[in-house]
Length: 263
Image 1: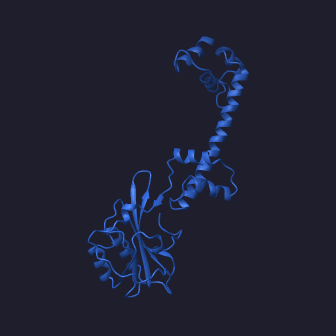
Image 2: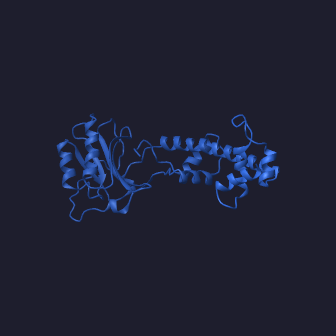
Image 3: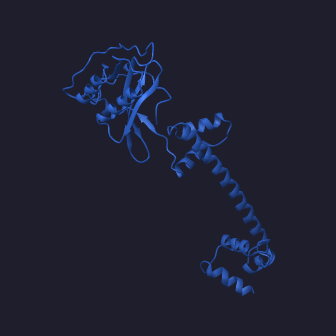
């Protein structure tokens, strides 16, 4: 009997089996409700040369790991909810801050580790210098809003912007149109390029929603060649809007961002 059990253990792995493998074998072969024909723990420990204290210590350690793994599964679920709620914008620091506000005590390094393991990545937004490079022969229009980023009612003034988004797999580009009366994103388009068709698509979405007045001002800075292109100007004329441009890449010429921006 003893030889039979040892042979079964050795066939399951290599000639020299470590203590963890022996303890797992004891778990599989011991008598239980599901295995009434099994052997006692004392018998199996004696046959396999494992002290009973070692076996029970292994069981306690495994139980602790199971509890820890389940707790991490719950935490990953909470991270996914917060990440989705931010439309993919939150990285580890803001996820950690949100969990703390909710009363969860968790180490920031653990959040980073779990997000990295499960490939949960926040989107990094930044204006890239290459996106604010004007064309050499660009034709500019007047600044019709004079740094007054307000509007008495919706549909009178829009502002457009181009943003580079860094994701885990590739770079994406986001063009937006924001209504200055409501600070709502009324048009947007995203792609893996920043050709003129991208802001044109965002502008068409804004117009397609309705509510824009005839002569509505579309304001951008003059740094991006997409906004000074003939195609973009033609679309503005077609929609019976007026184009307005501020200085190149000046943060004072662009309005404050709203949290509702698509991610």
